[in-house]
Length: 77
Image (cartoon, rainbow, N blue to C red):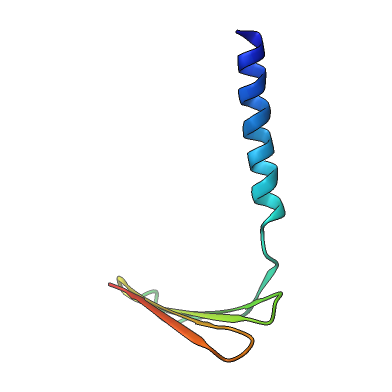
């Protein structure tokens, strides 16, 4: 029983460490908030990509631009 508990705890610790190692360096380069209903955030990633997140009430528009210029737009309402 003790061995099972120890192995589960060590597996959970290793999983957490693996998630930390996969984290990407990002920097918020611009953030503006108007009246609490509108906001815009620009995030620059370490690989040269850029993400712009625009919020208006309950809707969110996320525009991800790869370093080569390809854009992906995701809208949520």
